[in-house]
Length: 622
View 1 (cartoon, rainbow, N blue to C red):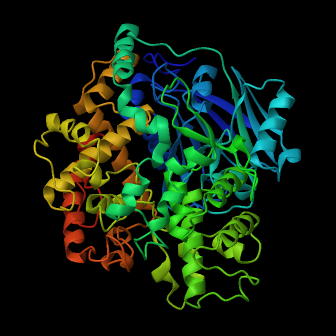
View 2: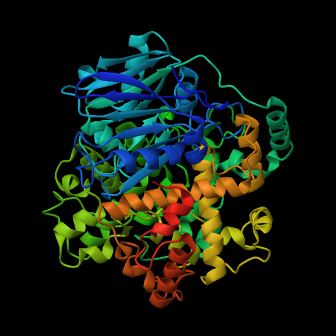
View 3: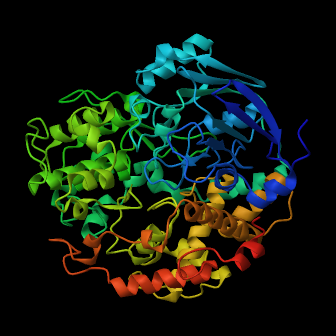
């Protein structure tokens, strides 16, 4: 019997050992829920407390954790999300990734707050969570199938086409180090190689069906928040109209768009691959997550020269950048096809695009030859080569077997200076926002325990007149003491302090688990938590929970051997780009190092980035 827990929680964690087939239900109590909240907090705690040091991320001792928050599945805009985590096969450190859709809400309705999976199955299986009944099903016939075939087959077998699935494709089965977990066919736990962890366990999918809506402590307060959102939904008009890529042309103008492996910065043909171009040519609709009216997800269909299945959604900003401008490609249909292939195979579009861009620059500089690429001309702008490499990487065939290891490991094997072309931090490929333009973002890339993450971070240009949401983002920081805006190109103590509070807000959202794109303020996050749980909570408490979670993530990495030397950017960003808005801009080593040390001090970490005993005691981390 589960211990009493607040509204918004079920009080149950489902544990599944695939090695011996054992299934257990473990209770959680209110104190634990309040201390770690859910989502990212739960993931960080269980990985830190339960994984032995130095385990093989692709071995049976790793644990794959799906965690909900108190807000998951509640009828509220942005609540259709959950967090997934494990030790990363890409970085060797902690990995967490948030994703939307309907799977998390369905798991909440099935009666659980988290699923922890360890061990390795002797044969391919999928987990079937049917309300309170849990079973391990044979998936031998599903191994090798893409995500659409897998989803259709499982739903047909179970006789229920409303079953929600978290699943992998061939990339996860073949242990591509940046394989992802798909939730449905276009919602993705994309980063850190979580799909490879799932594949290493012989787990093809987690199918869920539930029926009991989560309880809410104060329905009237929640109704008020829904009404506020309805009255302010115009703030989300850009996402509803264009998804996450509405500002792409402006990004190119100001220098925020990565071009040809972050080497260049001018991409005058950007208008061919923007969300406006998508809307005018290949888009057939927009979709959304559970209970969310924003509907920010593109649905595209292409008939020629490539056939693109609309079931796989459409490319958003990170994909348009990674498979597009960063590879020098301006063909929208090819990028849409690349997005479809990645979703069908279960491949992180961001790491895939960055690794392909790395290979293209290696080829153009003679570090890879036509002999090593089986005759493929891996040159920037070659859309056919990009699509071919996605296939090879997924299958681990030819040059794809090397690139499936990620750009850092591939560079180590190639040698001859190839590392200078690998745009990664902690072996984790860098997202599609230009570090030279955004110094606070750059620092966030450096210090984030699970690698350069643009979501658990800040983007400096959104805090200046360069972005229409400036007033919202600046004003919401005022009650926390950030009374005056900080110049976007600053990286002094005020900017570092701003990064910290922005980062902690993102972790609050990742723990609730709530979509970060929606304009809830710090205060509203506390209010909706109180409305759901009944707690008399505040922003101060929530920031403390987030700091605890971030510190635990850091402890995990310290235990795995990470040091302050791993918190560094590629050398490329300390030189200007060849053209474009960043042709006269570069980062400064001393300036970024000072900022890093000040960040450590603000977090209560020592000069080497290790959380101090005093800080651990203050946060109650034991």
